[in-house]
Image (cartoon, rainbow, N blue to C red; front, side):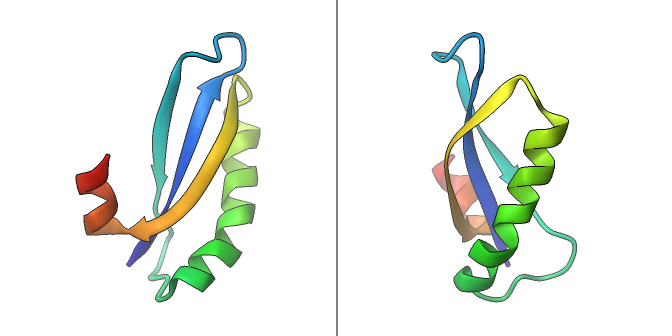
Length: 69
């Protein structure tokens, strides 16, 4: 299973950053599918978190991404 990892920073405090892990309902079987599904998911997240700005993003396997964070 893959998840979307977005690096976000506060709009008013750009030095305050964090990684956010978004997992999908259901299983996204390939990195390509994660990238395709990821853009609308980031838009949803961004709309519900207006104080944060997305700086970069990537897809990773759930088990590997958690160990790297």
